[in-house]
Structures are given as C-alpha cells and as structure tokens.
Length: 170
Image (cartoon, rainbow, N blue to C red; front, side, top):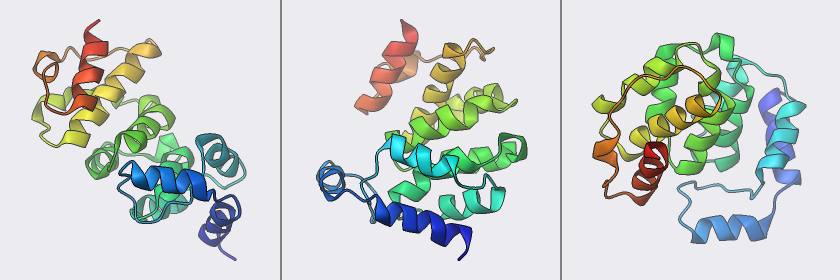
C-alpha cells in the first residue's frame, strides 16, 4: 500500500458524519468531507512521512478537505519554493485552508515576508485573505514584516477580509 492510500485509510477510519454534515451545511467548498478535526489531522500527519511528493499529491486532491488541510502539515519547509508557495496561495478555497497553510507552513519560510508584500497585487478573495493571515502569523511570532497598507481592506465587502484587516490594524 502506498503512502497516499495509507493516509486515505486513516481519513476513512476516523470519519465523523456529524462534523461532515455540519461543514457541508455551512458551505464548505469541498466535495469530499470526512469530518476530521484538526487534532485528528495533526495526529495522522505526525505518523506520516513528510515528503514533497505526498504533500503535493494531497494538495492536488482539491476535492477533499482533509487532503488540502494536511498538505501543509507534511510539506518540508526547506523544500518549498516561492513559486510553489504563491501557487498554493492562489489555490486556497476557504479560510480554514488559508489559516492552516499559513500557520503550519508559510510562516516558517524564509521568504514569507515577500509573499505578504505581494498583497497589493492580489485580487482574489482567498489570495488577499491568505496574505493578510500570513501577515498576522508573522507578527504573532515576531518576524519582520513588510510595510503594507491594509486600510483598503478595512471596508472589504468580504467579512472574513474586513475582520482580519481590522484585527491587524489594532
């Protein structure tokens, strides 16, 4: 059995229909939702090889919530490129995915401030949110952050972005 099959078996064994149904009703963008919570995903990630190949395969499985959330938990930071990080940001489907991507991977990258500096050039909802979330993560851990103007996002029509921008401005 290959690593991807092993991970999927863990997802299946730990599935929770109540959480899955709740996520579906809340508008989760994923077609396949096993209903695992973050501690369960972290436990599976802890016993899974942290390889670029497996992380990339999980990330490419965009229809499955658990796959997209686990990919940044497994990708070795030293093997992430700025180009791939930018692509993963562009691929984000929801706030939960952005939050985990930033917390578990992007904030550890040496070029993380440069990813935030690209904020003014972003136009997609989740690209903006992810870069703002990365800025919040960098500030929280005391890393140097670029000086970006977040005032345009304070009145953003998307509540996730406006709320995050207000938090950052305080």
